[in-house]
Image (tube, rainbow, N blue to C red):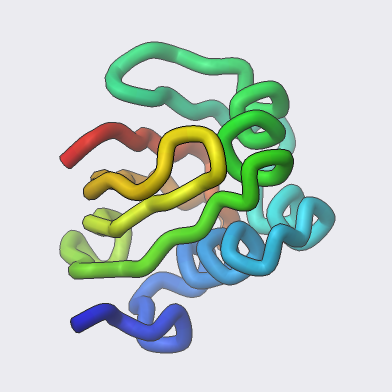
Length: 107
């Protein structure tokens, strides 16, 4: 059973996931601090290039399976048009109410 986005504990993570699932680039950027960083499977990535490729141009979507760490760690079924669906983990660092960094990878 999946967890509704509205039930995610951390407001910054909730805004991030909501924007990702809606494909809303503007709301997604608004959920991040200026200069936010990210990694995928332990490899640092250019955030703008990665999000365009893995989320927005490939219709990325997260179905949340579980959350922990006060809502800063998620396990989700993530799917997009490039890779299909896979079980992924997401860890977030929140600064001033916005996501400052996220790390994702296969769970």
